[in-house]
Length: 160
Image (tube, rainbow, N blue to C red; front, side):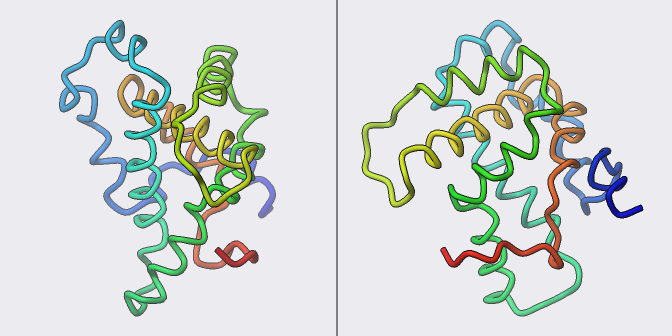
């Protein structure tokens, strides 16, 4: 039964996050053509914020100390963990979404990073996909995010 909940999206599982997304396309003020013309790094910039807000929303309950909350969030948003999450999502992605991943994976920011090059590329690809979906299709974004096993009970085991 637990496997079923991980293999299909859970609707309404994040406090307030889905309500925020409901008007995201209006807030962005970008046409679909404008969004497609954005660089993968610009999409990743937006996707990074979207993903962190999603993780924070998902971990909000049960109440805990802010320090503990922060440590849990950091465990989920680090590049190595995002690379793992991307692998979890691949079977659920369309060809168009996989193309966004490919474009973003090949983009480079030119700055030094703490994570391995592969993990950083995968994390950037995930963030770009989330940024793209945030700006174009909030319902699909929620479907994709619901596949991720993020909860206080499923904390990553590797240290940041």
